[in-house]
Length: 414
Length: 109
Image (cartoon, rainbow over all chains, first blue to last red):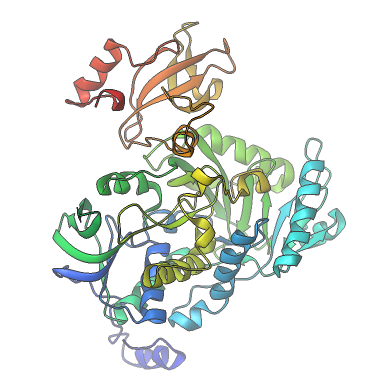
């Protein structure tokens, strides 16, 4: 693989850009791999990457039903933060944030990580108490966050209306290291690095069955033929239940639609990410100038990757009150993704009842920010059978009542 | 927008009038049941890509709970029926099997 660098740009500039290589190969599947990862989104590719990088396991295939990064990796609002209340969450999300900080250098691929800062608005007394508690919890966890007053907030975000009639801004939880990254580039960068290590990224290849013998996985059936494997990682977000059913076990997951939308591009007006959880809206400005807006999930099970119009209306209505200038914006486009929600709104990274099958799912509405940490922990789990990062995210915690209860902590979708 | 027929008040209610209540026909776990039974009742869900039997409440209407057979892959609604039943009625099953030959409810599988 040719490395990307300023010299490469200069070299190609002098020869009409004729020397750029394909970023990754598109091979046909082999008969057998040591490890198969189902799902070439961020989490799946990151898992494969750290399997190769940290544990030297490179006889790996990453199988993708659609196209690379075409699921939730390409449908989120690209927000990265680690200001969680519970210790296991803070550990894995902060690991992810630390890896994001050097990811472009690590992958030799510009993921455009932008640590522009992130503020979660407190708009009720309940949220004020909740976020002050989170700040204190974060201090104990070693995650740098701080409480900001409405006046400080107004300086950070001049377009905000801090004394709205229904939901005045009473302060905020501020994480300076938080920010955004280019979501497609994260998937592409990992895919390129995986391909460079000799792994096969196989797109347009749907899994149609999981083969087991004596309670152990032996391979999968796909639309491109049968493939054998020693270990199987299921990293397919919204379709986890469908895939688990093929392997003969169930998960405490429900799939619902989550939507996002972007406005027309405008001049730079907001250089932090702002989340308003009481009113279910969050907003940041992309490098192109579009306001990227996300809202709440639909309330019913759904696999169609399109959501209800009235949820967009609710989100935008809430944002108009907090950011009056939004009322003049035209919205460019809207899309939906299928997220897998667990009972405690925390992910599942776990062994399963079938030996050799590992599952990484349940990231719900907040998976993008976790991609490098999730891959790091999942790779360790798959290679060694145990990882301190993922130990608490076991799928059996619901039976034992050992929840990692971020749904109460956040009071809302991430 | 999803429009469901409320079997109690007869209104064709839009999604904004309704509150989704998750999977229908759950068997409640009770005192003395195992941890597995409670896990099953509280957290395990069918989550089918396809036919889904679910509870809805006509929240901004008559306020009553009713049940619905819906396709999560196409958003097609096969019909709604009153909540005072432990299994989907014959006409709903007929409407589903017309589109999904061989479909059977998990309790009867």
